[in-house]
Length: 269
Picture 1 (cartoon, rainbow, N blue to C red):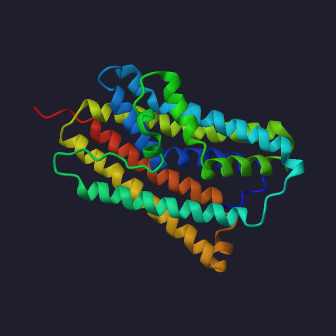
Picture 2: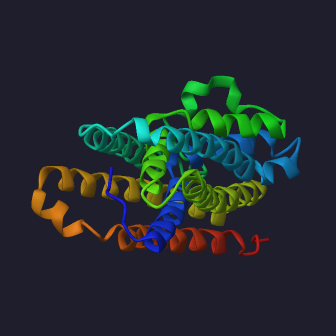
Picture 3: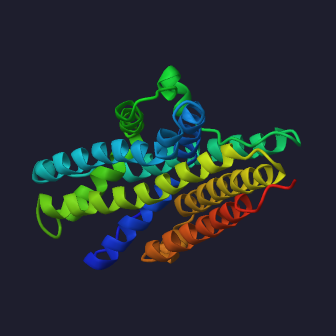
């Protein structure tokens, strides 16, 4: 896991950016897609807000873990191997998700809409097919019970204790959740719009996002592996976390905006 900046303002900004990036995680996109599609016909209003509800449940666990870890921070030190293990797990998952989503784009027929592919969602079974706001939030909470999310929340909390007590950890966790809520909420609204129109433009838009999710996952995995294997690259990237995170979110956001603009084109008669 990357080192976080020691400047409080930079740390706040980076945490929000990381939350936005986390919201674009392929597992999030795939599960929100499934929840939205399941409710699109019977409960269209709920379908539009599946991303928001999912993110709220996910964020509630992040806040709880951050507060718990900040309370125990004085009694526990992060093991030296913790960051390396987290990086290896993250790289492995990113490679798998990137490869699966690239395959989904390549396999899709000319008249098929590309749906994001995730790993965690498959473990939830029928929980992805729920039609109550509380249950949608519960799915988001269950998604947070994973090594990457828990370790990230713990890392934020431990870093925040350098600046103060649990209030600082709560603020960081809240900013992370706000960033994630922004991207997941917009994604849920966009998927609902995409489902409502199944024309050629929607097919193109779904492929654009599928390729972006795949490409970003594989590029981030490659960069993470390079940092682990090359001390020179690791040293060069030190202190540039905020710039890298902002650039990554900007690329995804621009691609997302392009896909949204495509879905706003009028349906051909």
